[in-house]
Length: 143
Image 1 (cartoon, rainbow, N blue to C red):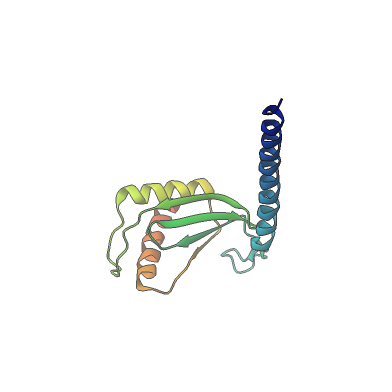
Image 2 (cartoon, rainbow, N blue to C red):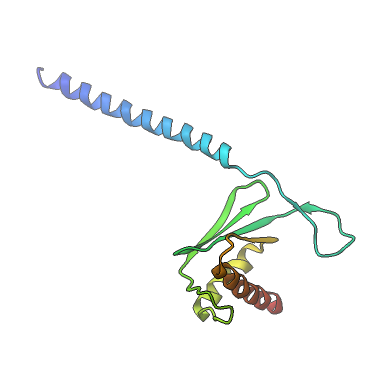
């Protein structure tokens, strides 16, 4: 009897602490998601007389190690992402590895983004932009 009650009390306190952490974590997650949610985007299709419409998918690319590619929907919810080690140097003529081209091409075909946003003003970003244009061009010729 001396040892049973303290053990039960300890177990009950540990269980309540765990439940509280889950509850607080859920609330913090909801608050953070509400703060970072992206407002709906509108864009104009390539035709001059076309009306603006919501972009179904927007792809953001962040040049780093690894390079991160994220696709969000028109409400800012993440649909898909890809982390890939792309070797980019400050040389516009640099070719991307064929395996990287295939991975990015598959990612593009799976998500079909309406807009691709590439961040950064470095020379490396210009090289990556040229490489991505090549991959996008390949995807369009496959269709």
